Structure formats: C-alpha cells, structure tokens
Length: 77
Image (cartoon, rainbow, N blue to C red; front, side, top):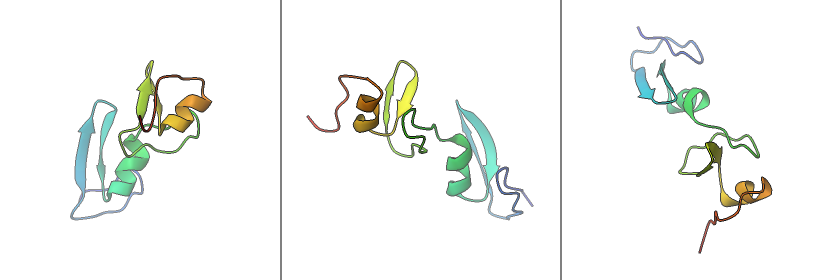
C-alpha cells in the first residue's frame, strides 16, 4: 500500500502529485498542501488559492503584498 510522504499513513487510495515545486505521494489534499503549497512571504500561511506573485515571492492576498511594500497588487479594482 502507498504511504503518505507527510504523515506516513498507509492508504490504499493514496495519490501522487507532481509540480514544478516538487512531487510526492499523499493520503489527502491536506498533506499535499502542507508539503507543496507556497507560503505567503508576509504571514506564512499556505497559499491554496491564486494568491499573488511579485519578483518570485508569493503572497496570499493583496493586503500581505502591500504590507511587504509591494504596490500595484489589488484584491479589487
């Protein structure tokens, strides 16, 4: 049975995810997010939505980007 790379659970329905950020075998999306999702440069949360990127750095929202000194990123126009 496949084993989750994050929690070690042996699970018959485990799946593999491959991205440019890495790959792994997981028993849940929660574990896949924990290992593969980028973290916000300002608050450190895992970014599971679109987020925002500036100069190779990721932010979960425009607020965090602005708090980090980034201009031109808005949640709403």
